[in-house]
Each structure stands twice: as C-alpha cells, then as structure tokens.
Length: 65
Image 1 (cartoon, one colour):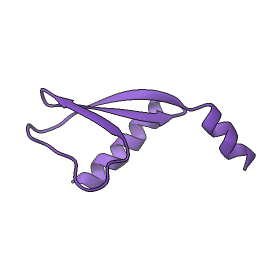
Image 2: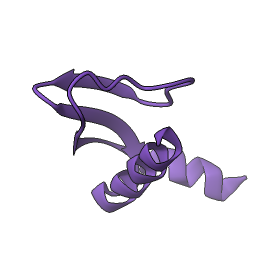
Image 3: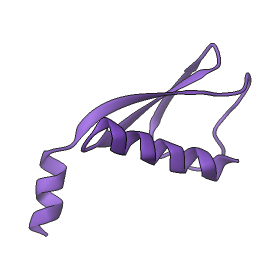
Image 4: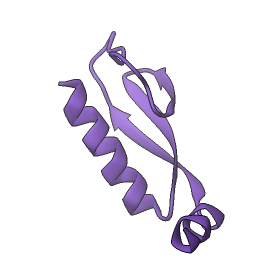
C-alpha cells in the first residue's frame, strides 16, 4: 500500500504526440485525455516518466489496431 501511495505522489503529467491517420478516432473506452489536430494525437498521461508515458500510449495504440 505504501508503494502505491508513493507512486501516486510522484506521478507527473506528460504529453505524448502520436501521428495518426486522418479521421482516426479512438474506439471504446479512452483512458487518457486526447486532442487530435492535423494528423497528430496528443495524449495527456500521468506516469513516473516520459518514457513510461510513451510505453502506456504505445500499448493503448496497439489495442486500437
């Protein structure tokens, strides 16, 4: 339980850009805030690092295909 609380205290918000096809829309439940403009989706993700945020978005995008 302490690890969970420590993790929550150390989370930061990261903005991960991902190029998407024109007209792409997420399917199903969306776990992140997303803004899409000019073929780029910007995911707002809470994680411990930018690298962790990128991995989370990568997993989400794999589920979308």
